[in-house]
Image 1: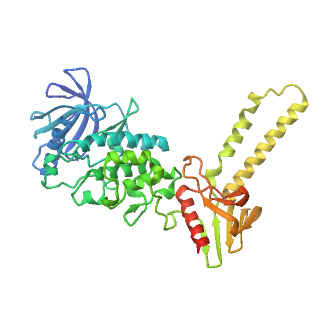
Image 2: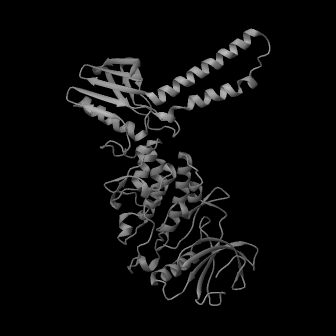
Length: 438
């Protein structure tokens, strides 16, 4: 039995178990030779262990020994011990440097959600590591990129760890492939035993989807082997398209190299738009189309529209501390009016968010946009269909501020609908343009 405080090979004292499965254990330890923490990976060499597990463990040790990158754990030692107390089998021990921090999976489990800028920063840092690995001769493929194998260090940099599924020179030169990886992050060609550098890019793309949505890729909807995530979020369209290029099911359609992926991210607005031939998964927009008219109902947005309520609450709670209302009765009644107005507007926003919707109607001569509450129209705009010059949605928007579809008219007039998710908006734009052009 391996326990906390136990000394391995008179050199490493175990401090904390980091992970375990049927044949592996991973421990945080302190070196008794030099005052630093290290990570020990232990593999029991019992008769039941599969040959491929032993070979993968040896491969990881050999590959780590030849790597030299600031954001990959450093190889420290590798040896076999025969005299662990309570064990009748030998143990294969791999020692590597310890990265202080939390895995991205741990942060997700704690409820953290990653912003668009954070996701782009993480992507660039991982890609810089992959540029190094894939440029080695032969290329080193990690084959198991996922949130639990990415450590956000105390220095706020991302480290790539756990090379237990790594592919080495023997594999690259034609030896038998071992199918490894984690379901949800592994592309089809890797399941077939033929991983390529683009396979790591696919796993990176799936990881970024997990960070953005907070949901494992394995639990997200798929269509034609392509993960459908864009309709679930509202982020920059360029970033959506870029992630889509990383996660193409067909490797021939995918970005091929980490260097190309970095260049594509820097020019993400030049990438082709997301596929929107089908209504985005989860969209509640109702669309009725005939040769003579097009009718669209955009439903309520719910809690996504309540930012004003939060602001009004802040004003009501803290305005007395900001404004000095002690002079006369006039100022006091003025302040009461401000509070009353804030509450009324806040209630109105709640009602519109949960019970309001927008309707668009087009025929060959006219169009109209109606904003309704409890089915009653409280605001309406209309115009001639022939005066529509452009229908669009901004390409770059903040994840916290979705926008609607904008109808541009002659004389610089414009009408903007209820805010929509990015891909949902582009799908709706395509539907309207197709009908107008027909």
